[in-house]
Image (cartoon, rainbow, N blue to C red; front, top):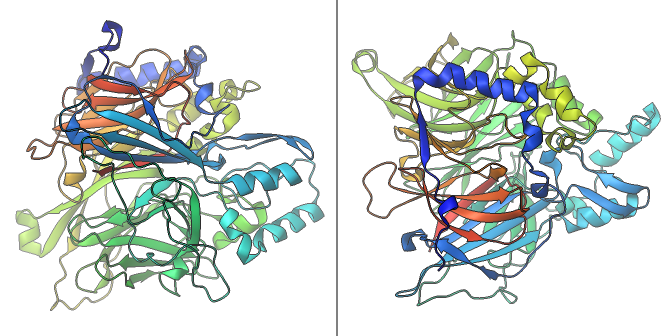
Length: 606
């Protein structure tokens, strides 16, 4: 194990509530003034390679042995394909970059130092071959721009082709957002869907896998690994080789889960392992079906159906789970024509209606313990979010008196939908002055800055004996907490041991405006509003910071953060290990080449 260079041992710096306004303005000034031009990040988007490995990567510093396990990461990989039938094909939006999954194995020996191995695998090679042959992608996307020369008839035909993708081709779809290890209910679901609606195929063979051991402490082993996105499709990969081996849809879990959209961020009960999610069906009325997959049996049941006046089709990326409730917030990202407009536009962004401050966010609280369905609904100001943080419930004197439960929901939110447009590749990569055009607009820049909000709802407390007389009328609720950027950021994480419990610390990636992407890692104290930043070196761009708790630790922040960081100056990446309490580096594993900027990861303990 190598030693850390002095220049790498950077300290953390702290900011307080007093600094919030000034720091927000500094970030805004950086964006509007174009400070991001001096922060190279293109290596995380372009020229990306696959390393099937695994290969051992050198470790410097001290990665603790109790962090042993496997860190899975997934997200977009390559975005341009050269040599197609019509020239170079360019993916328009970052969310549509072709899926690329990564695995870092942290292996601890009984006496020797910790070793780290890296491997990666592209998940959309068939999509890549299709684009290379045809010069286009006929499948639906998040934000792929259509050819401006496309006439009305051609648009109708292309929309029809996207809607009529043969069932045995569906597994070509690009699925690249979240990794779900040991997903319940799909143990026998592998391979392409057939006409019966049942999934068939093979289970992981492991024949090409390299067994990674060190002193008897083996890397994590799993029954299955599935990758999900914001629709009802899932792709299975071999847990060891990351080879794509299967495909299914939520209809495999339950025949009524036939809608096209769902949530990438399914929630797991931390005690039972049960999985919760929702399925969104389009039509004359939009229908949201909230469902649970029992970890013990693999059985799926629908615990609530949400439809009716004011229930809009929408793009939703995450939701909440508490010990008693599932909480679904429908933000102001409404999809036109009850969702059907996606079929016409062939992508989500163009199908979303223009932002309107009169379109309130609608909240629905679902009882998940006693079968009472929706027990409360609320409204909050118009806005948008990608990521919820956590939710928890408590009872104070008012709750005890009124027979209610206080539900608290933390979220990283935006004042409008503008953030979606900031994630086009031409903005991220500063092509044709697209970044300047986007960020130079002061109001648009403000709208794209994150805020961490906490909402407090008082919800009727259902029991087995409670008779619910329908949903309570919608109530308007104000924010209890509102922390602005850069004291909070995107891709928020917490100590997983505090999921569905009151948490104090949130870890996220802030925007200081020095890069077109996220340019820091911050620990936000929701109690004191202090923000503790890792003093990131210039030109370094981090990925989602995954919290690994210290075994036996009692403090909420007793653990380490694992983040894949790109050094844009050298065009190489490393796995960073930060002390989650002090926000200082304790170790790293240098990969030696650029690893794609990803979305989300999951650490599975050895």
